[in-house]
Length: 381
Image (cartoon, rainbow, N blue to C red):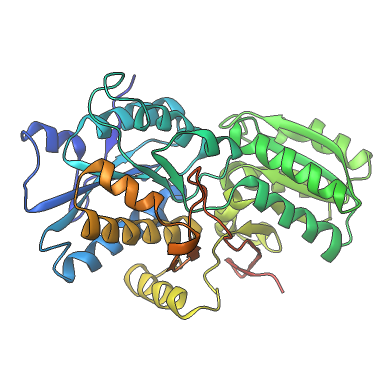
């Protein structure tokens, strides 16, 4: 396998390879892994928010006087690369917890490493908390895997209800990336749309990275339009989604376009992305004092607004801060603290309430529908 690409860019950030090469970490520091597509647009808000949280923690004298350092590794949103990243983080005894991964397929593959019993993998199991992996399959990933985002079983029904009840649509076409995330979006949307009186007139998968010009999907889009599709739903990431939108408009489709949380980055796609609806567990205009403090600080430092991946990464960092402050740096103790954040011990984050069920899924997280307006994703009214 190709070695994961380290990211070294600021004080408080160290590459895992360098940490190992130096014979371990400094006991004055606490090392937290951050794994995701950190060098891509999809992972930018995750990276910047993790760094922002680490600075805030360190400016407040760290955790018990020890400063936080982030061990950042880029998984390129690739399941195979995520496996390599997970192996490197797990076998590094200085890494006490991992924030990651972002993409569902990457999180699922990495979870097999983080959750493996001692002896099956080098090193001890380590807690994994994903900010944004929404595949329902992650529910059964293991006792060391958690997430602070709702699942596709919650995102897609909100989108289906919006399409049917708010937009009055009855015939949807679904194009979805052929992985755990895209399949989850398709299946849960189709069920919920049917419950709302609609039907899916066409549903077609595509392979990630294969849509270069958009013309590859012309036959699917043409068939959907011929069948009278009055809503187009995209289950994928923003890069492919933008090409699908361009192709649909070129072919004459004029109806609404909707997508689940993976489509968030579409807001940067220019005029053609205007009016696209996206379901999300965090929108930067969320009417909450804690959320708005985070948004203001992020915008002051980076000149842009955070997305849901950034907000929930920030929440995970602060959850881990409190876990380590309370339980120390033992991996099992940190995992047990996180598992104890249940209905009775819920906490408030910038993205909303955080509490976990027995499977590590977040409970009761609000899902909103956003719309692209003037290059920003804001709450759809």
